[in-house]
Image (cartoon, rainbow, N blue to C red; front, side, top):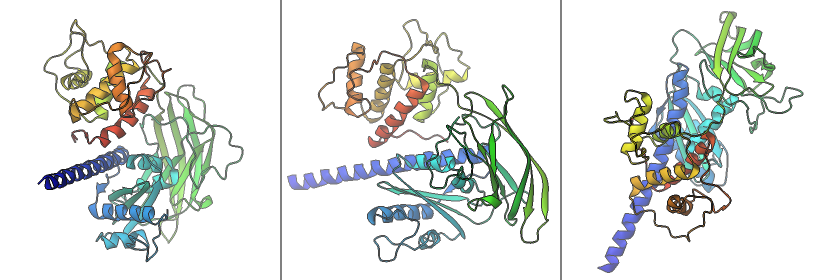
Length: 448
C-alpha cells in the first residue's frame, strides 16, 4: 500500500511539473504574440493569430534541431523527429494548408519573446514579421532551440498596396543605438562607419501582385525636431541589396539623442516588373517617432504602475483611496490594485506619497510578496544559509534572504540595498524575477 502511495505521489508531482512547464511556455508564447501584434496593430496591419498546427511544426523542428545537434532550416530524412525537408513540408505534415510558409530559427534565448524582439531589431527579418501576407504564427522551443513559423494565404490590403515604415509614426521608446549582431550586416556596403549607430529604418511596399524592380529616392531627411539638426544617413535600395524585396533601408550613421522626437521625410518613385503600370510616382512619406527616455529614479507611483502591468494583474476600480491621490485618476487604479493585492502599503497618515523614491530593498520585498501571494506564504522555505546583508534595513533581511534563496539577488555584500533604484535597474530585476515567477508556476491572470 505504501509503495502504491509513493507511486501516486510521484505521478502527481510529475503531472504538476508538466503542468508548470506547459503553463510557462503558454505564458511566454502569449507575451510574444502580444508583443508582435501590438506593433502590427499600431501600424494598421492585421494581427497574427496563434495556429496550433504551425505550433506543432515549430515545436517538432526545435526538438529535431536539439536532438540531432543541427541548427538548420532543413531537415535530413533518417534523423530523429524528421517531419519534412523544408518548412512547408513540415507544415503540411501537421495539416496546415495555406500556401505561404516562412520559418525563422534562433538559439540561446531567454524566452520566445526575446526572439521576437531580436527578429524585429533585424531589418531583414522585420519585413517578414510585418508582412500582411502572414495571418498565422506558430512558435515553439525545445531546450535551447527556437522555431517561429509564419503562414498565410493572401495579403488583406485595402487598395493594391500598403506602405509600412518602421519605426512607425508616433512610435515611442525607440532605442537610441542599435546592436549589430546579425549574420547579414545592413551596413556592409557603407564605408567609414565608426561608433554607435541608430536603428535601421525600413520602408516596405507590400502588394499581392506588384514586384518592384527599382526604387528611386529623393529628398530623404531624418531630423532632430528639437535642434533641427539632420542625422547623417545612408539609403540602401533593393536593387543594390539582394536580401531586400520591395524594401528600402535608411541607415542612421550615428546614434540618436534620448527623449527626442525625430521626423523622417522622403519622396520615392517605384518602378515595377512584369508589365504593371511602369512607375508609381511621388510616394511622399513622413513619420515622427520618439526615442527612449532618460533613466529616472523609481518612485512609488511608477513602481505600482509597472508592477501591475508586468505581472498582468486585473486592474481594479478604486473603492477607497489615499488622501493624497485623486480617486478618479488613472494612477489610482494601479495604486488600489497593488494595495488590494497586499503588494504595497500606504503611510500611517493615510497617504500614499507617489513621488517618494523606492529603494532596492523595498523592490525585492514587494516582489517576494507577489510571489508568495501566488504560491502560498510558506512555500519559499529558505534552505540556504542566511547571507549577511551589511547594507540593508533589519526588516528587509528576511525578504532579501528569500530573494537570495531563489536566485534573485547575489551574495555580493557590497550592494547597498537602502539606496534608490532606477527604472532601468528595476526592469532588469523584473526580467529576472519573471523567469523565477514562471518556474514556480505562478502565472498572472490574463485580462484581454
